[in-house]
Image 1 (tube, rainbow, N blue to C red):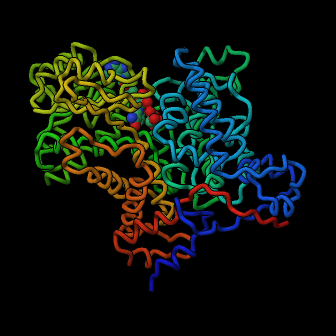
Image 2: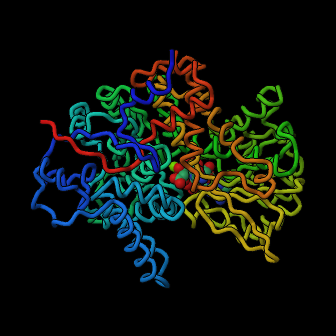
Image 3: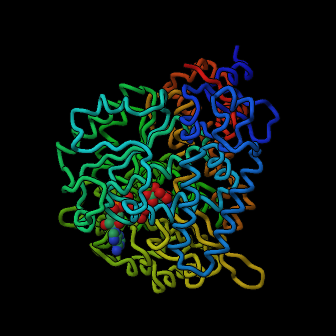
Length: 604
Ligand SMILES: NC(=O)c1ccc[n+]([C@@H]2O[C@H](COP(=O)([O-])OP(=O)(O)OC[C@H]3O[C@@H](n4cnc5c(N)ncnc54)[C@H](O)[C@@H]3O)[C@@H](O)[C@H]2O)c1
Ligand SMILES: O=C(O)C[C@H](O)C(=O)O
Ligand SMILES: [Mg+2]
């Protein structure tokens, strides 16, 4: 019979619970002396107790005084706060990069302390290690480079990947995030410099999902770049050749996927920031064979769907009213089309109508305006959402955004275009004519300068009663008289960590649509009616570990019910099936790694 205690003991994780008084489990280390001090996974800096210094050959390699974890923590936070004070008034980019540097130096030196400060201060630090600063870091990566992090597979490594993968020092890898750097946030092709994105995403995996940092692996697949500026930059660190295309490109990705699954058959691979054509193609190519997903297509879709359902509740309408909402999606790339696909499936499920009629309420624009069936060279990926001209009275093929908003009076305007400021004053003012008593504006493009509008502009021009969400963080807006315009962060960070965690802890063979749907539904139902009425669609990032545990449990349960779960450690699918919802959440929580100094035990 399933017993919680047994499940906990069965876990392979080096873990401890926040504020728990339990003695942390020991951690096996195969090094001694200075090698430990130079390994950020094990290093405790001045925090090594004297007995451990003796056991590990560290005596004399550190100043004699032992500093406690709490003191180290306080010292780091004081340096960070003093950097904030000292850089006040300097240009934003300079300040952001200075903050990133101080965090990155700690990451390079002492991962336990790094992840503890990250978890405890996630609201302050997420904008530094994740969007928006991570975008700036990628743009300046070749200049900022000091030490490598993760692995780099290039077109020149063809035929070598199966052996190269064994160069990674960790025996076990659970979570991989891979990019080819071809569409980094809204910043375009950044080639090898895009490695910053997998690093930032995996930091979120550790902070939000409690994945053990010794078991994460950021990957850059460098197949060249079409960014002329980078190709001409003598300091550019990637391959100086145009991107591989077609079969040559796919051969590289195929070889990588085979190599990674040969060494770690249960590792989960998250594809991130691939240009749309490869995002869709690789997803279809691998999702039936490997435990993988595309975060921009599928993670974004779940977060957007949760937000869209929230906007129905914010209008005081029942969820069944979702099928009466007119939703305009601006951007028909990997993210926009992913959102449309999942939202149409949800409407069809909720209304019982087929997908063709469920599509009626959705309208999509790309750089050439409204997409209709009359378009020449219609992108096959966008074709299922293209409108019949007869269904868009008053509009035509290629109608502009302002024409679309004025004519349709949509309930929701959702941007995933990567074009900063495209929701301009005129467009936002036109949203005042929306058929919704509570129009919703989602400016989801990243980083901040690529957001379709700012929060302040949205409330100023579209009205105080809107619901607002952005992909990158903005401050709440002061509406006067003590009223606050709440800013939501509609970012896939609320889903991908839970998707990966649930897949890992269930030992899922694949990541199915059902598992992703369960994740989205879990996020959608997380907020109370009171919060939703105040325009709060998503939890605060401060509680990201809680929501991730819930999402992880929902994903796990869905994997079990779809018979995709193969078990984790010695917890089999049968035992998982017997867990109640609460027990599943508890199982997930207890398997989340939490940074504490574990006693290190040397083994040859
Ligand atoms: N908030 C999130 O969680 C999240 C998740 C994924 C992507 N994004 C952001 O969404 C943006 C787009 O990502 P993607 O992967 O879909 O990119 P993409 O390049 O695949 O697609 C961009 C789409 O926008 C369209 N577009 C360009 N200019 C336009 C214009 N002037 N008017 C209307 N449409 C226009 C393009 O034609 C294309 O269809 C990026 O900025 C990315 O950072 C945010
Ligand atoms: O990275 C993010 O912040 C979200 C998303 O994956 C993006 O590509 O913009
Ligand atoms: Mg992305």
